[in-house]
Image 1 (cartoon, rainbow, N blue to C red):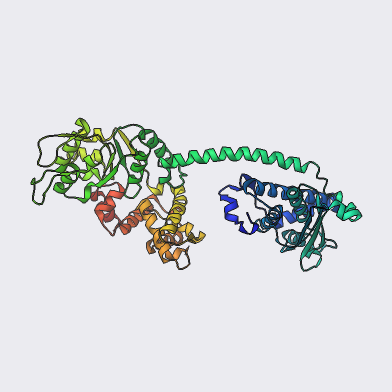
Image 2: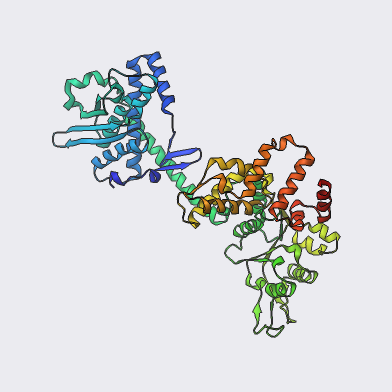
Length: 539
């Protein structure tokens, strides 16, 4: 392994609330905050004790980084490990080091190293909060270099800073030697190290980290298994409402009970059906989907149940239907509320008798298939109106799972946006695709009548239109920009009466559906006649 091969993204795991270097947690800190800390220590403890604190802090830091590098990578040459350790200073934002001299005399047991630090963060923090210094003050850098090299070579090596940007030099420069090579010159500096116990502490920490990393590896393995079961179908879930839905779905998945998934258009009913299938004992078998509203009755019957050659014009050969093709697996019947009474009866037979009858045949065929259905209609109302069979509804609704609309779980919007951004980055070959923070207000305040599907389409539009991969508000659909701007101009929903909020929302849904009142009424959960009355009242 060569030091020049190190890359930050391969060493450090960046995830929300957990920044770590191969199991060793890291924390970002502000130069100004640490500068104030330095100033306070100088005022309270004086320069000698403050220097000792920072030197020992740096010494432990250098040894810990060296231990981490040695733990995760193979180093044939200790000199490469030293170079890698100094490169870590650059990766971690401490300084930009340049090794001017690196001489190890193994025969005489001598060490002579010279390193230059440019853009020293420590010098900058001192200048910001304390001011110009009369002597070199990069005590953490000196401690880091000493701890690093001592660990790599297995012997004590001490660095002394000769030049420092905080006292007006062009850069910071330090020399590192073994104790014998320094001789009497080292004596005044030894008091700042006092590092007898540091090496053993680092070694104990390394053992503990190795143990933790094994545990993490096992957890990652279990997580991969979990993802294979279908959890990867979802972005991060933050709302309690969707968490409860997922919990029920996961428990239902283990059994063959029929499931009816309800919710508005675009909430993700098919995604939930796939989640149930992928967590079920049938996961290794087919998952077949069909939109029942997309086909006329005769074609839907043939697609579902199959047909016999000659049973109708164009039926030139026997053909199995989707129910047979889903044998031992799952079939997802989307928009089940739109099927005719004749198809309803045939599906009821599948649920009751576990058999089908192909079009044009008299002999039933046994099938072993799990049925998951979905609808955005009110099937109870359909039963009352005589449009849907009550016995079929009861058979389908052994378990009913209602997915809440996106406007009722706004905490899920940003995780979904990040999920779509990652997916679109790969799909559209836009490696630098990201959402500008100025979009958040628009995304959070819009009502999303089209739910998750509308959100995904909005993000794809912004991704396609962004020239540099940065999705800005002006690349979002115009109606989203306009609606949020109107809300802000009018003082927002909190300044409106309940009736005004209702009318505003109705207008949004109509706008999103292209003024299709039937579709809008379905999304709003009211009848077209009720919608018509509300619109008439507004006028």
